[in-house]
Length: 329
Ligand SMILES: NC(=O)c1ccc[n+]([C@@H]2O[C@H](COP(=O)([O-])OP(=O)(O)OC[C@H]3O[C@@H](n4cnc5c(N)ncnc54)[C@H](O)[C@@H]3O)[C@@H](O)[C@H]2O)c1
Image 1 (cartoon, helix red, strand yellow):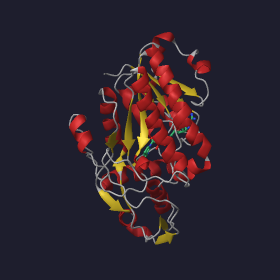
Image 2: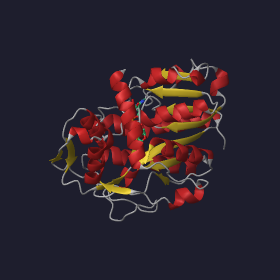
Image 3: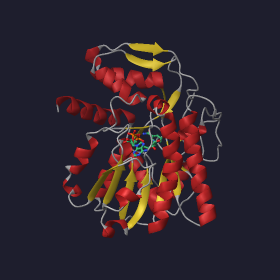
Image 4: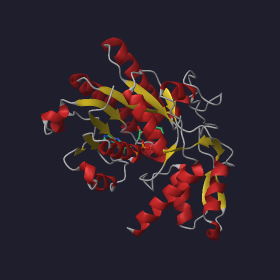
């Protein structure tokens, strides 16, 4: 199913802003919705300044858990009628922020997902919901295939996010079953790149900001926990292919090269040899997953041979350059 006009929730955030830019550059109209509770405020003027945005970007500042009618009625009919996809990406995503906004996180992935599907059903569009590798919790197997049901603590500090995403998946599955629709969801593994909020607390941006400030690099525990890091352009390419497919089942999208957090900190150390950065070990937070690595077999099979291409070392250089340009601006 090819793209026509696209409505993106969370379009002012990290992933949403990249998806918005990518689709504008491919000639589509984008309705971009965000309440900026976590997204970087400068992402809106950045997107609006793109030559491709003139007459084709419709930016709405709104909370997607509230009724959509008050802002939908201000959008031109010719734009609304031709919405082919709703990419529902609104949600706090970093552990410190989703724990601070725990209830809002639960509502945006449940009520927000329901509102996205109600709107989409009205115009005949397909929803793609941004789910997460966190639905696997602290996994007992690695790499994690989509068939793994996960190991999640329902009453832990991460459950507001993990369980909200699990509920979002279940809501889409049940909605498809009962209403004969074809909405889908992707399970996104740790993704990094320019336009992340520098204060959002996720590990890659944290380490780079600390390095640029010449501060010690802080990691949890002994840094033996593993993660795999996907550069944002690779992720957006996978999401685009999933959205255009007819798939309704989950597909993992990420990068399957696995690093310990200590190895990541050492790569960052080597990027800034002149700063002689120390690594500081902090107390391990509760329920932190020990390992994270996607099984990408399904993505490679169903998404036209898609595979991540950008090496961590190269992606980190792009991100460093962006952070330095922000400091100069
Ligand atoms: N980046 C990753 O590594 C990753 C991994 C797994 C899943 N995801 C999912 O992808 C999506 C985007 O994540 P991100 O990394 O871009 O995070 P982000 O915080 O940069 O972007 C999320 C955006 O959603 C907006 N938002 C939140 N609640 C809202 C609401 N009620 N109404 C309107 N806007 C709202 C925020 O202001 C923000 O701009 C999230 O759903 C997240 O759970 C991201």
